[in-house]
Image 1 (tube, rainbow, N blue to C red):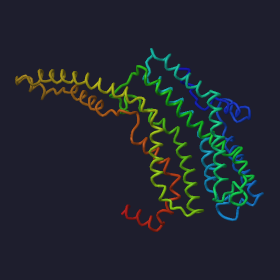
Image 2 (cartoon, rainbow, N blue to C red):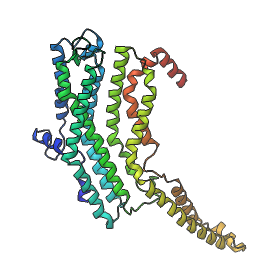
Image 3 (cartoon, helix red, strand yellow):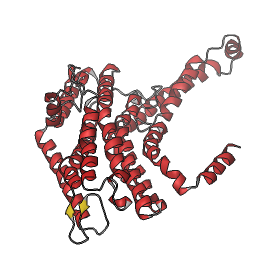
Image 4 (tube, one colour):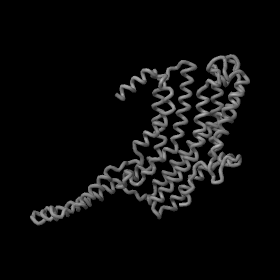
Length: 390
């Protein structure tokens, strides 16, 4: 149980150690809220200052104006603080779910050692220096690729200065390359790696001899508490959607690109989010299906015996039996059986419901709402809403 009590997937690794050394970690190991504004200001404010020094804060064109670049503000003023502040909330959810496995009795006493081993392995993956080094290298490579693309693109940008064909990286571009963009990509990559760790942990747990109860009121064999697990990663969807919304807004305001051309990309984005966040829970598809089929078979045999006994007692053709049933009705066992059997038949094959799917979709849609009046003029939108309500 001890490993389940401290399954904090963000409280470990080199980056966490650096934050602890910088005073951004509290006495109980929690990440302090003040680190979010620190990283946000360190990533965003120098871009403004350096762009202003070269006349790119408000440049010759909107595309060359750093302050008019909505994708930058979405990335560093919205997405980055969301990802940082959500780490404590996610850790609390991870610990709660791990404890519920044991506290609810889903993990049998005989498997507690294997369960603890799975939790310990998850923390080892969390603390891996090699993995974080790879993630950091990936973040730097992506930043370099972005700057390289800007320098070889004829489209004006605040990240570069000079005439087309002879562009050089701007001061703000240097800071974006050296700090801002690697920081954002690294924080995002840490979240995605935690999703992988969480999936591995749940896969290990699903291979135990779980004490599933197909008639459980949660409709998921006693695993209904897992439906809230994707909420821990919902902030990633919200953050990525905000960055997409900012990027598409820039494309519209700076280059006149119709937002409707991104419709299929957005649909694919929502579908991919659903798959990524719910994939770890699909590890329990097999155990739940096997438990459901086994219990339906056992309850089917019990039901046949129960109905046969009922018939023998009350429908034996004697008037006494029928009269006794009328005067002293006692079909409660049959009614209880029907209720339990019905609950087993309705058990879901996955430990989540439509509400979980809706939650992920809402997280993806929310940042896009400010773009709706661009696609649908406000008077037309209000008219459609009025027709829907009337």
